[in-house]
Length: 121
Image 1 (cartoon, one colour):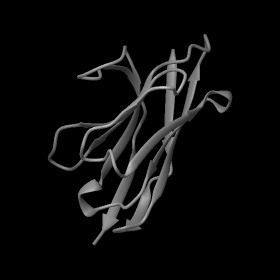
Image 2 (cartoon, helix red, strand yellow):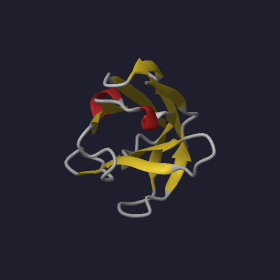
Image 3 (cartoon, one colour):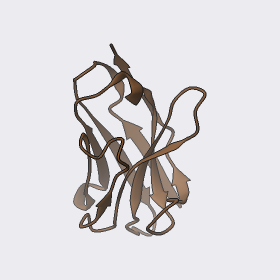
């Protein structure tokens, strides 16, 4: 029903920036609340950001609130994650997801394949 494809990951130096993209496709053209999550090696998957269907509401954990920005362009069926002032601890596989609703613990019905982000010191 929903397919998500992430892109934009790569290797960046500490203090640098990356913009991740998530292409969203759904046969019914339903517009979902969307989220970004990340998983570092040996760690649990962590919530990074959420945006509601219209883009009017966003949510971030304290670990990224001052540095990351989630946005969307519904005309292009794309969700973005702008990551600034990157730190080595941001190194992880980043996943795009379609949320079931709105609020913690941010359960998701659909996931992308993930894109790798590596921040060098």
